[in-house]
Length: 242
Image 1: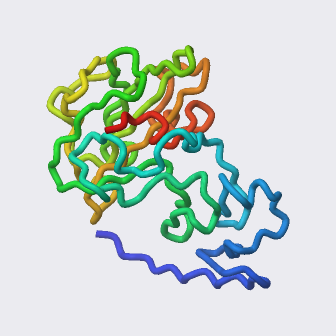
Image 2: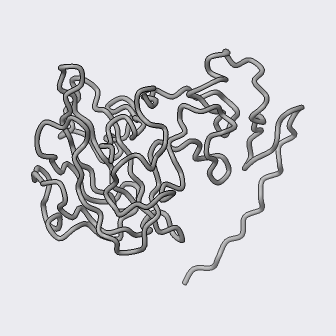
C-alpha cells in the first residue's frame, strides 16, 4: 500500500462586499443582482460557483397545465406529496435547489419518494403516438434508463426523452442489449434505488425535448442531457393527468 499524502488546504480567498468564499472561489450572494440583466435575475438563471450568471434554455410549465404535482400519473405508486423535490429551473435564483459547494444548482425533474426495490414502470406521455423506444441503459445519474417518446404537439410530431435515474437495477427485459427495444406502458423499466445518490432512495424522473435535427443514436450518454441536443422541460407539460 502506498503512503497517504497530505495536502494543505488552499487559503480562503479575500472576497469583497456581498461575496462569500466557497471552495476557493468568491461566490456572490443570491440577493446581489449587480450587473445582471433584469430578465436573467428574475427567472430561468442562477449564479454559478464563480458568481457568474448562467441562463437556462428550458421549457417552463404551460399555464394551462395544473401546477399541483398530485394531478399527474407517475411510474411508481404515488400518494399525495410523494414529489418531494420538483422542477425549479424557471424560478428565481434564490428559490432554486442548491447542492454541495453550489456545484449543482437547480433541478430539472421531479424526485419521487418510493421504497427501495419498488418497480418503476414505463408510462405513456400525453398525446404519445407510438410505443416508447429504449435508447440507453447504464450509468448516467446513477443507473439510468432513457426512453424516447414521440408526441403530437399542435399537429407536429416531436421527440422527447425520459430519464429514469438512481435505479437499483434495470428491469429484467433491459439486461443485455436493449437499445432499440420497443416497450409497452406498464412494463418494468427498473427498480428504485440510490445509485449515484447514496443515502437517498428515490426515483429521479426527468423529461427533455429533443432538438430538431438531432440524431440520438450518435450521442454519448452525457450528450443525451447536453443542452445542444435536448432541452430540459417541466415534466408537467407532458405527463398524463389522473
